[in-house]
Length: 446
Image (spheres, helix red, strand yellow):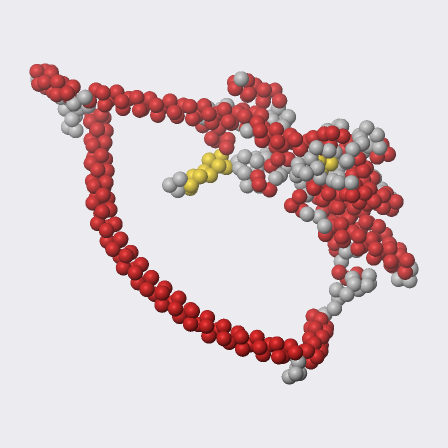
């Protein structure tokens, strides 16, 4: 389980300082966290944004998130993101760059659309700029592969610096400048009706048929005539072959039915006695075990509550003889073996409880303490762990927390109940415990 945490921790390498660590995951889906050190870097330069593959990318993030972003900021942010993509970004960063450049360009398209409307729809330059930015924004947003969009904002940022805010901006952009209502205005032909498209297609098809197929002397007509005759010959020969295959299949099916009937009869003849013998053995074993339980519970007390010990004392000679007979049957060795089996079962149960308690300490005290919580949340965002009952959500709590199994019927138990049944202190079954308590919990493992 430490390997899982180690893998999740690698995702933080992109946020570490140094070009070597930041360029480590070019071909990986390790995720990316947008941190305040990048967004609040002075003039979007300096040590907070070091040189490397991600420098232009993080400069674009910084410019885009400036308070009261100006039109020149939006244009610069879009250009920086496009430049970063040409220099080779990891897959996750490419999706975030496409989202930021698409939103920045959409803001520019909105500004040009407002200017065009303010001119009474007379300023053709603003219309042209609107259509250009609208086309670029649509291309950037449509190119995003959302199954690779494993990016998120760091915890504790302002409400306008969240992924929900960016998605809301994208929805407003789709409903605004990118709406299909502007297609005709920008010279697109997506507003053709189905009737117009059908009429155009029918006319074109009619001309082709008239030119190449309607004439009797047409070479295409002659070619189809030859192919038709050849196809008819193939159909006749195929029918004959199919009839032969059917006749052969009927013979094979009849032989199979006869052989299968013989096989089933032989199988039932052999399996019947085996089943009956097995059932009789089970019934006898059950009866013997029931009788043993009754004997063990009563010992020398009869069902009428009569103590047989005085009579046994009186017949001590018979008991000695019976003891000799029992010794000859080796009951003592069998009882010793039974005691050994019971001890192994008891020890196995104790070992199982100890193993469960150890795993629970690793899970609660190591994986979900304050030092590793961000790593676990980021790891649990992977699609493969969407339904894992041990995963932790964005709120720092177990997403499901219920383990289920189908063994002779469905059964379920919560993670906390399982760990407490293994002897773990309830104080050590909390998610997101403080480091001091986590260290105290883990001290029993070392």
